[in-house]
Image 1 (tube, one colour):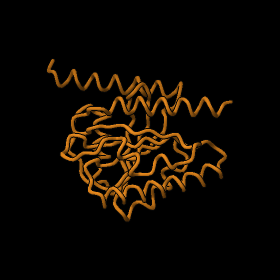
Image 2: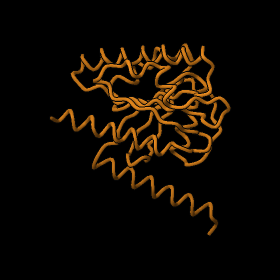
Image 3: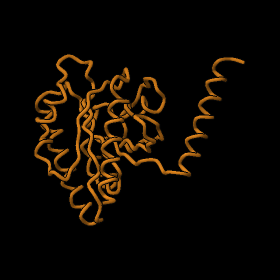
Image 4: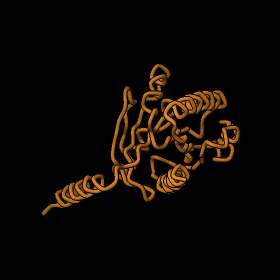
Length: 205
């Protein structure tokens, strides 16, 4: 039997196991947002298929079920073009977690644009959570493209994007990654899984 057939059978078996697992516990809903060309779709496909997939700009959204970082996720990747960003609010209204993907090699002007969009999104989240009487979803800023020259370290991005200024009730973290190679992605998802778990435990008290 050819190796490609074995691979196909293994993927089918994995898919069936994931579907069975969702009957016991639904996957954690997470939304990938960020400016265009930040690498969101590359992140999604790397998490789903475990390899680099050449992605085209996302006009609407992509969605995949993935296992990463100890969690079972339903990931929505929403387009980041300026005309599409107003739609983020609809996708993030009842999400369990947010991942804001940033090209860590961005110029200062582009980095400021990231900060403005992230601050706007977190303000919208505040209003939505108050209206729905629910805890704020954890936020992970993914410092993507760490392989590029001039890539900023996570600590620099955190300060530049105003994360320390967020309310104490907003759980957040920053993690470095390279979606092309996959380096750092599982660790980033494990960090997000920890934040989601803590948030759920706190909401039960």
